[in-house]
Image (cartoon, rainbow, N blue to C red; front, side, top):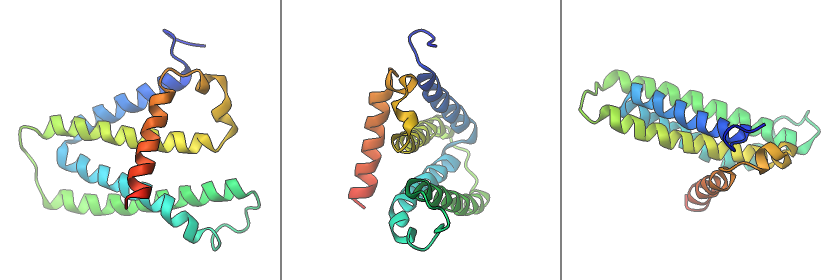
Length: 159
């Protein structure tokens, strides 16, 4: 089923971007920059610590790919929780009321959406869902893959 030529996956991507931008607008710049840094930290930790921790954790899961993604999900959750605690402490210490707070909050909401899209694409690429027509026929699939490749290159190759 498609709406205006958009697949369900296109609508999901549009929803992720719209909600993230709206959320960022209401939260403001300082909170959003700390959130973005938390997501980048989670992304970096997930795809660098998975290799280190793989031999030691979740050995009861026999399927290799499931074990890897359970580990990655666990690392992501721990990194996001840790980053969120630090962010809340910093936001309480610093009050931010400057004119660009809303505008820059919107911009950082957009960046967060791009990071989320990169996560979605990387997860889907390791599953059979990725080959489904509602994803492969997506208008925005090429752009979403480019976003994912960009974050992989920047965070995994240069840091």
